[in-house]
Length: 471
Ligand SMILES: *[C@@H]1O[C@H](CO)[C@@H](O)[C@H](O)[C@H]1NC(C)=O
Image (cartoon, rainbow, N blue to C red; front, side):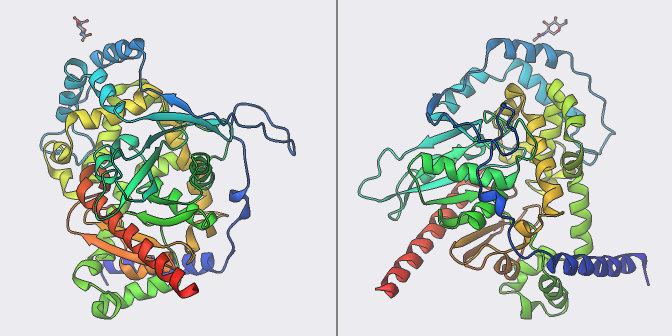
């Protein structure tokens, strides 16, 4: 037997045993994610009451101090770059030639004040929740006409920010086929203008609750939710913990659904794809060839291991060097957009984005010094997900919450419909797209906006039907 196949079999056996052992463990969600908590600066004694939040909603303007910009230029001007090996493109990470080009542009041509104007085109606010300042955009449609305005929250991930949604905002706030949204676009705690936790533990579960509180504070007891990356996992937990508040959950990424059944079906699908997949031509390629997918995931998730264990170590360097930060973040906007971009001279960075768009996202991390706190989000979350609280990832979203999945061709990992059905009891919408990658709304705003609308139309239809049946 070849090493490849023995390795494959070893992995299969190891995974089955891990899956089964996890599967038979706790089958209930840990309850504490529904409870209030406090992540502010004050020291709270065990059992003492949490301080009241200042519930005021304050207008916020993106306006970085001039001293930060001067300091940034001085740092960029002192960048030390090690030449890449000729012909390697992005195979060793961000290529030095591309990095030099970006640094030069950033230092000499990039106009942050113009970008600020663009960012301030929509209304930003902050409010305090559980002791920390949460930043968000709140955009109401200017011409809703006679259409009912639906509340929708959009949530970014890492290394993205609220800027990922700028292209999709006008598409969602303009009525089409009777659907128009009022948008709330928060920054995850510790990302950009949202404050990070001052004590340990602020993870996806707590963030789900904080965001539900935010929507309630804005008068939306019930709302739709769309997210990718961390935004997807936060939404997943919001749907699990607060199903009474979520009208529908739309995602471009699944967590990591685990059940022995998925594994067995995948193996069967290897031999009899028609038996397992609704659309075998597209879906059978999502999990296989297993070995290639596995190698790709290992190759692309080194950063995750680092963040989940020692985020502050690498963070110190990234927070101190704009070139280092750019290199670290840009690499993700290459292979996560399309894995084949690793072999393109500029990592394909400018295929989907302008240099200004990429730099503005980096500026959100740089100017707020939030790279370390954003990385801590993994440290607070992943050991729990794969450890004692694995039930929060493993248990499905219950049938009260309709779920829609949009699978883009180049998403880092994709799941066929049968897997999505095990993760979501009420999967009413599952679409695959032959293009687009990890940053769906940023890369393919039209497709993403249309898919959200299609999903929400289905949610409304299902709710109407249920109403009729009740009568
Ligand atoms: C960069 O440093 C050089 C040498 O110290 C200096 O002449 C130049 O003006 C600096 N450029 C910027 C944009 O600060």
